[in-house]
Image 1 (cartoon, one colour):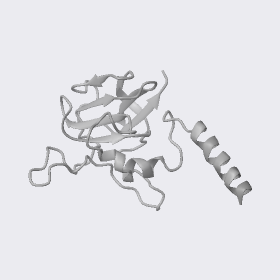
Image 2 (spheres, one colour; image 1 turned 90 degrees about the horizontal axis):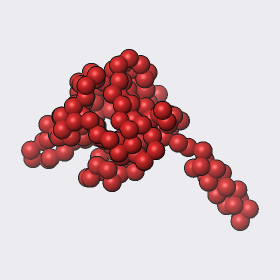
Image 3 (tube, one colour; image 1 turned 135 degrees about the horizontal axis):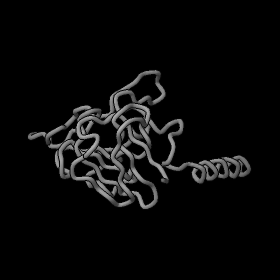
Image 4 (cartoon, one colour; image 1 turned 60 degrees about the horizontal axis):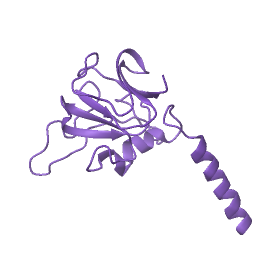
Length: 158
């Protein structure tokens, strides 16, 4: 029994070391779509290091994103279906602007809370087209190139 636990621990440890937010891996879509971190109460305190907001100036509803997203409108958690990534539903009796709206072509600002990677928000699906780039710990109060025209997001080192 101890040998099996040791082998399992070593496999999990190796996977944890090899996973970086710079590139999408199997299971990342599921994490982005279903994790409790996506709507954590305090942006920047989540393990997900990009926060994207519905309104300019980091206002309105938001969503924390942990991994690169190839298409905000077709996140695939592994069940064979594609789901749109949505802003968190905040403010039960008085919903915040953007609550439950699709992120694709609806985001106005963002903040990168990552210490190492740049955050790139792209105009087109598949990390293509015009983009806004945030260095580590940088925010954009109002997207310049992808304001309400954003389709994908990627962590990069350059």
